[in-house]
Length: 267
Image (cartoon, rainbow, N blue to C red; front, side, top):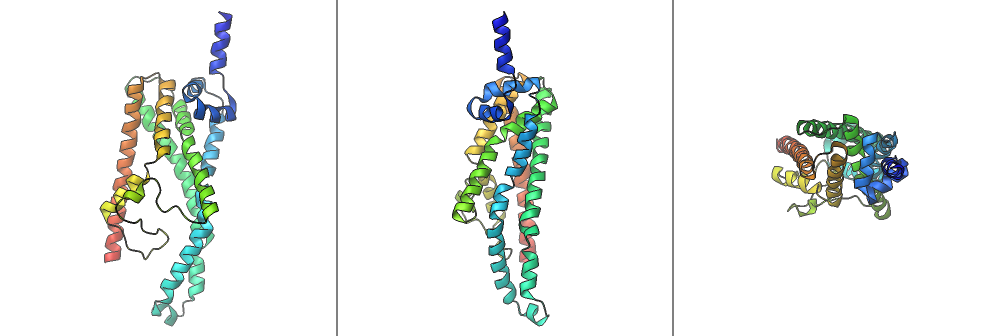
C-alpha cells in the first residue's frame, strides 16, 4: 500500500516549469493529469512566455516591414502631384507613417493582449460546455490546459522568427493560404489590389491550417480528458465545437472587413 501511495504521488506531483514543457511535448497525457492538483504557478510562467513569443515574429519582421512600407509610400506619394504642390514633405510624411511605434510596437502589444483574451475566451467556452455535459473541473484548471496546449504555437513563433531573421523575408503565405487560388495581397501595400471577399475568406481559413493547429487541438483534447474526466469522444466534440464556432466568427469578420474595404477602394 505504501508503494502504491508513493507511486501515485510521484505520478501526480508537479514536474516544474521545464518538466511541464517537456512533458507536454513528450508525454502530454501524464503531464496534463498533474493539472488536477493545481500544479502550482508554472502555467503563469508559460502564459508570460507565450505573450512574449507571440510578439517575436512581429518584432523580427518590423525592420523589413518598415522598409518595404517606406519604399512603397514614397513611390505612391511622389506620384501624387497634390502633395508636392500643397507643401507636404514626402519624407516626413513617410517617416511618420512608418514609425516603429506604428509598425512594430503597437502590433506587438495588440498581439500579446489578443493572445490573453483568446486564452480566456477558449477557457470559458470549454469550461461552460464541459460543465454542461458532466465535466468536473474548475475554470482555472481549464485555463491551465488552454495555456499549456498553446505550446505548439510558441514553438511556431520561434521558428518563424528564425526564418525571418535568416532570410530577411516576410512569411507571405502562412499555413495553406498559398492554395487559395490567388496570390495573397501584400499587407504592407495599402494601395494594392483588394482580393475578392471569397478569396479573402478562403485565405483566412487556409492560413489557420497547419501541423501546429492539429497538435494544439490534440493537446486540448488530452487536457480536457485529464482535468474533467470526460470521455475522449466528448472531449473531441467540445474542442471541435469551440474551434468551428471561433473560426466561423473569424471568417465572418474577414468577409465583412473585406467587403467594406473593397467598397471604400471601389468608391
